[in-house]
Length: 172
Image: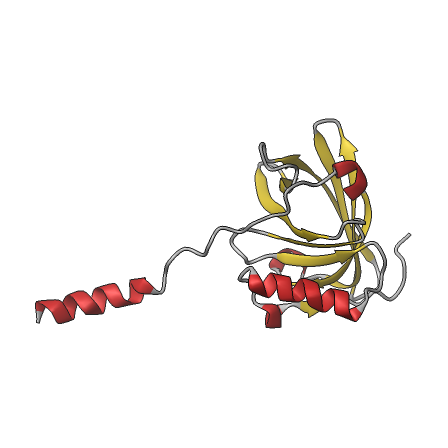
């Protein structure tokens, strides 16, 4: 009986193992990474729920930090915008950043896949609850998108949960 009770209490914990560590790219040249990126797909999250299309991020070196501006189109056609900054995690080769829009709260922004030309990127958080596929252009080759979504799945993200972001008109 005692073994049965132990099994009943221990069995649910067996599925609660921590996910494997999330690998990033070895290094990111922040000067090359700077500029505009278009959101092609994302894992839906509460802080972007107002965004219905045209989501875009801009990164700019700012001394020891990276200035961040995120913009998107809302359901009524207006543009929503928020500014923040990111700090590089020491020893990460610039592949791990901590981003804040509401100091002192920071979120993880890890570069998980990046093409050699800095044209397409997969970024996410180590808890695998947040992820984005970004491109330098508003539209992305379907094969390239699928390759990044496959990479996300291989890293433990839920590929089926990714949603496409319509890019209908420039925000500039």
